[in-house]
Length: 224
Image (cartoon, rainbow, N blue to C red; front, side, top):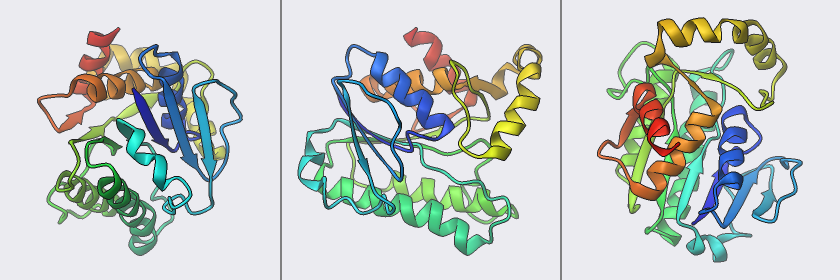
């Protein structure tokens, strides 16, 4: 299986990349992002561009990939709706439209988040924008489209967030992870589980197109 990965330097993307490189069924990973991963691996091919929605340089080879894992995302903290929509909805749809045109036989998996508003009419801005993005993706012409909605994600295997405040947040929260896992198992997962579940769904599909945190953990347990 050949996969395209957007957001390989983010916390979730790092976890997905790790699992892809470890999986013997994955033969090639094309990581597209604004910066390089800093990793060297025989499976890994990287393309960097300040505007990751511009795929013209790689468009000819996109038909050779079986799945796209879209892990790009931005925090809505301090952003107005227009700016957040550009980084969330507009960017995602631009990439997805190109991929659907070039390779409609591909499976597209989008990392969203728990609490996303599928009605697009709620009071929480980020949830509305994510909901709009999810709804639009589910209407696109792919072999299959799946939405992942993880809740709290614990980074493991040395994975760290890109931004300083993310690293500070997880430094504070990580000691509580064992407690949260015991008390609220439906609402916590790990970077490893998200990566393994994405691979599992890309290979075998899922009866659900929208997978909540509990579904992600269940799939992860099945593929271990």
